[in-house]
Image (cartoon, rainbow, N blue to C red; front, side, top):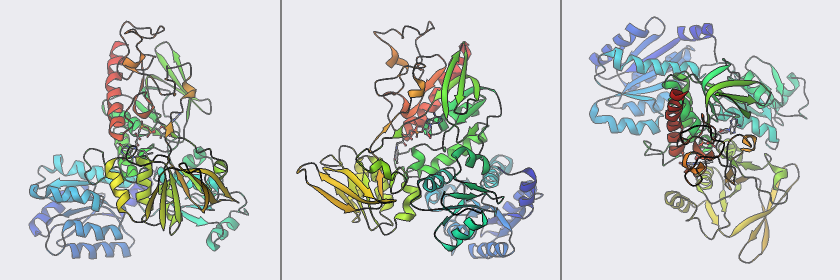
Length: 562
Ligand SMILES: Cc1cc2nc3c(=O)[nH]c(=O)nc-3n(C[C@H](O)[C@H](O)[C@H](O)COP(=O)(O)OP(=O)(O)OC[C@H]3O[C@@H](n4cnc5c(N)ncnc54)[C@H](O)[C@@H]3O)c2cc1C
């Protein structure tokens, strides 16, 4: 995303800070850091949390940058986690690692959530070549690619009831592209519109970091202009992964790490449904939960680190089989070829079709955009339709800023559709009301949603309530029509794989090989499916990641037989 010269320039004014209350240890860490990183980075050391905070403030005043902070956990007065919490206010973009003794590992794990810790290092870190340097290298890579440096910012001028403005914000947020939002009816927004020579009748206006104005840009145009990769660098890959949710990211990490030339193609932003989850509490290894965007952003970095190409804002619209080659066609007609393909396209939210609701999509009615829209909902009474975990998570998240959150559910209770832990959370929050046996039968307003009509399915009675925000989580469907005639699907459009393809123990009639399809293989050899798009899949983050990894193992088996 940044040129080598820009990186060099940034590094010259960039520090790595280390703090440890034991002077001998502090000196030793600084010495080891200097030996490996001293030529490119300034190594700053301190012997207490307070002194380190002072040093950070000085650096800030001078306009210097801090890429990495290594803090000892066990320090008197202020421990490493308390220090990092304050350090984050000064340098939020600096990557953070904690130095701990074995006995304090638990505290370090807790810190992963409190201060979004990137790593913890066990003392002693000898030999540094094995234990310290790879960690600091990884932290520096993260920092260099994360654009937390003071780069000129992207500005978005829009209106909260402009559907495309809302989509652009969602696109940038989900792709982790920092931007600043200006309302078109506020003075600064107006000034930017004037400067761009537009009257604001078509929104949003996006002003890039280079100062170029884009009016109502498409996702592809936006991706290109903000530095996201959209074009494959090769014509041929060992593996093309279609879809950048947990299954696709899992496949990309395992594919690239095991030496396959791998490209992942995502039509909007990596993360998929999981990227829109405010808190995933049942993913292995995160006892306190993890936000979906954090989890999937780490996975994206991991895939890139292993050399997978990650393309965003590119929709795959066709898949062709030419002998042992597989051709993946994009919406603009261009194509790449591959030995093997993993379909990880997941599912897409079903739309609520009650009269009036479609008219307000993006203008008060949102599908899964709870994270982006949360700020606008502050102090409002908001409505959520749906009884599954996604609805529960959104309710918990939004309840922090809203006056009230009503969950509208057709069933008589949440217990059958929502996990027990989430039902308990929902019930413990006074601002959340669960309205069972209730459905939305109409939406009304002018340029945005203003009212909803609700019906009680027991009595048939209807009533109209004031509502500016409606979030819809009513299940999802696999959008696989583009695969019609290519791979076999079930009656609902989910892709059939492995044993599900067998009829009376036999593979489908046009299956060309002597062996039956592998477990995640579709009706075409070398094309695999993983995650939610697969018929009978578990519809969970962990299973999607697992299937992505397993599909790669089967790709290897397939390639060996080619
Ligand atoms: C709000 C919410 C909260 C959730 N919370 C939890 C939870 O707490 N725990 C849990 O286990 N599960 C949770 N889930 C379910 C979990 O997120 C999914 O099971 C998981 O994301 C499935 O991963 P996937 O990769 O198979 O598909 P998806 O996550 O659906 O990703 C598919 C990706 O493919 C892309 N794509 C689709 N078609 C194309 C195409 N033609 N070309 C290019 N790209 C394409 C999509 O844009 C998408 O990014 C939640 C789901 C939601 C919506």
